[in-house]
Image (cartoon, rainbow, N blue to C red; front, side, top):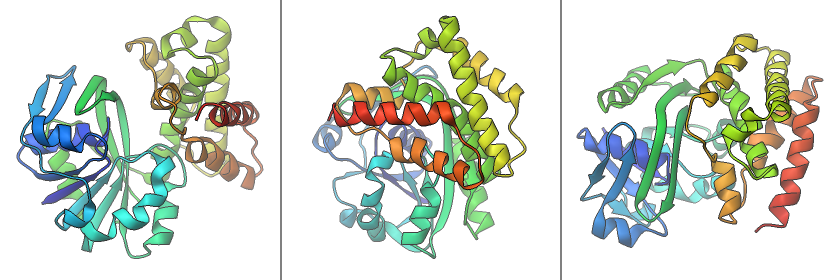
Length: 303
């Protein structure tokens, strides 16, 4: 199968490089570091074993890329609108697009733009960053869950899953709605709180006050998911997420890095959309609503 990576950042670059290293035909769309990667390759510094992918099938325009069986989208959701122009050149009639992005409401929006497109949600549980040209720093974890949103070709969906696994990636199929909200349980508290308090994940949990606030924010996400009819997320999952974060390296989530580098933060899909979805069924995430407003203030004064 032919893969196209739209957004060769910390996430898309990592999974794309792993797939290419395992022998898959992978084509990468790059922007600022296109010339560097074309000349030097893509370096993946990883807790699971570092490597350099060189040469890289790199492009700076999707018009130059081949049609793909599978497109992995690793764009920041702040650039979601760009998919209207970026996707058509690489699409075939039965192409599957995997949105490896954070937030709620991504698939419905893309489906509205491309009604016949086959969409899959990619929920990455990975701590990875890209702060230098062509250099991905994978600190820990690395699994990915695939939630079928509108993929009609079950055989192709299974083949994608198999390719990830054969590339050494821990991947599994999950129920779409539950998976998106499970990811939000961690993302909504930690992304925003590391920005609002200018800190990292470890210090948030070492302080009793912020540790309690993180737990309460997680409970709001669980409460919202239950109000929306999702029953598979409970308090035990919250404790699992807190314990996991206790044992991982001190980490600056993607939103904190965006803030530090004066880039727009992914507030709409990470906060505004899930908060709005919960309100539709009468559930208010009051603490996270406050955090959203704080983030909008910081975002407006940081760009």
